[in-house]
Length: 100
Image (cartoon, rainbow, N blue to C red):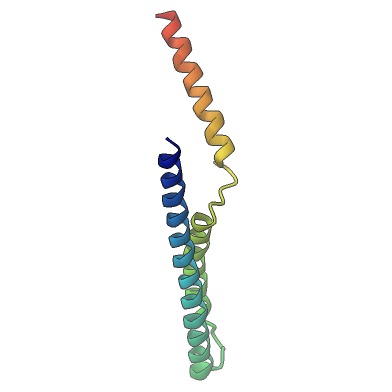
């Protein structure tokens, strides 16, 4: 059983590392391409209309969601919430079985 638990921990850690690696790659791509778009925007019209900010905003929203997933940050439905909800549902099911 201990060996099974160790393998499970390994695969969860490996999955998390892959998600972090993907996030950091996306972050670097974001920085490079938004910088290039900003330079292009300046070269074309000297920022009279900063259109590159639309791309930065749209891509940035996606990057925030990817960061939330990679860093396992969920303030609304965290691990504590999951455990409480599982316990609540198990108790509810147990109560229903008693009354049948």
